[in-house]
Length: 253
Image (cartoon, rainbow, N blue to C red; front, side):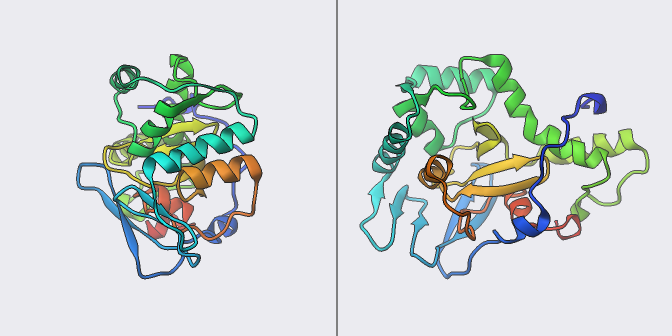
């Protein structure tokens, strides 16, 4: 069980009212999230017609769909335009070694990006720094446990909260083992792990305060480097993390 004394200091939080602004948009078309183990969620098309499909293509403002290779190449081009230093991408062997060492699988978008280029700039995940990566991998769940410890978070689906703090944290840890794992991209920006996640969002996570910072990786890079107001998200739904990003109260989860 996590030691409550080493849980992270609470970061500046997105207000629940702010996160509520990013509840999913309406629309008739949907996409499916899957981690390869039966966990699924739906996402919807934006009013502008942008949609990431399971077939790994992109439709922007009615233009032709671009392949996954073209989408990631566009993201790399934006990084170069933004002055981000890039090293050559990881080989298959390097990606496989990282996944084996840290016991997860990159989602297809994340893997494809890292095999094209590896950002070398402050804040970006350094996959050669094992200690820093392990810290970043643990941070999202430790952040949730921080809010559990301080009485700010207990989903209704977890049942009655134990009165004893140690038992509450132990119960929370067990419940959180079924939550999709988040993999660091840059600072507090994360993508979900899993074999079958094409077009998944990038989350900005601070304990249980999180928002969708990009409906997909290309959208994220554009926002991260060139700004733009965060709008109502139309991203593929990811269990638990999308509920937090939608601004749901604990009683609604």
